[in-house]
Amino acid sequence: MANVKDPFFWHRFSLAVHLSEAERAASCKESSTADQDSLDHTTESWLVRQHKKRRRLRYICGMVMLLVLLLVAGVVVLAWWVAKTRTR
Image (cartoon, rainbow, N blue to C red; front, side, top):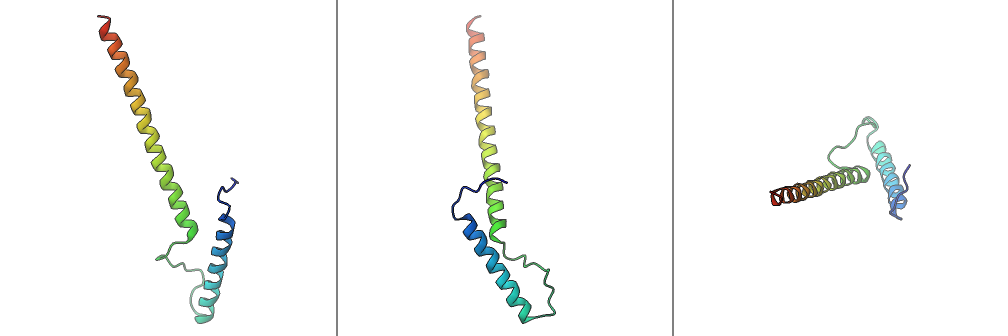
């Protein structure tokens, strides 16, 4: 398991779990006939949002790396082509 760099991560994680458990207990008291395993899909949990942020960041970083590699390859090809045409 990777180390978390954010020093307040575990505090926020614990708080999110406690709030989720409190909401589940309150909803269970209000209606005992409701299905406890059903999820509210209109709101996303903090962990889901963090996962989406990380995935978006990885995608953006990958695209930037691809563009840099294409730029470097273009410069190398251009330099090779200029060197080749000057020798003629």
